[in-house]
Length: 86
View 1 (cartoon, helix red, strand yellow):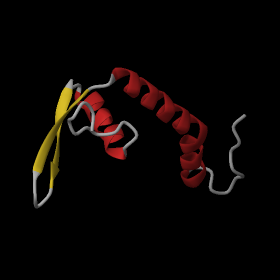
View 2: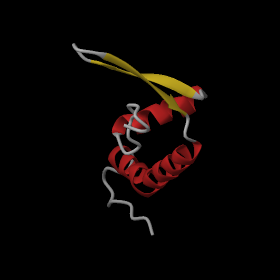
View 3: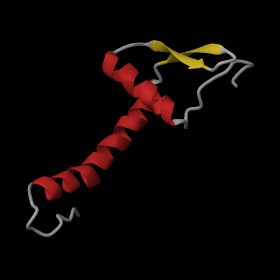
View 4: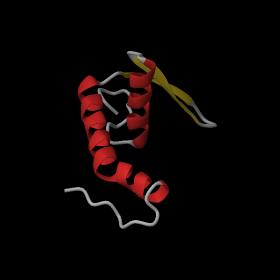
């Protein structure tokens, strides 16, 4: 809860997912819907530019330092030693 209203925590996986989708779709906000058998709640989530900048920077570091080399090693360099990055 934030200010007496339900809110999606910024450290929740769904918050990352929604922010990524807002970035890709070039939208300023979306409605996050929580449905249970007892209730339905709509939470408006706005694009969080500082959060997205940090998230995309972290994703870029992960891609360049780990993921790219794992993919290359698995599909292109199967018979070679693992590529080390300095």
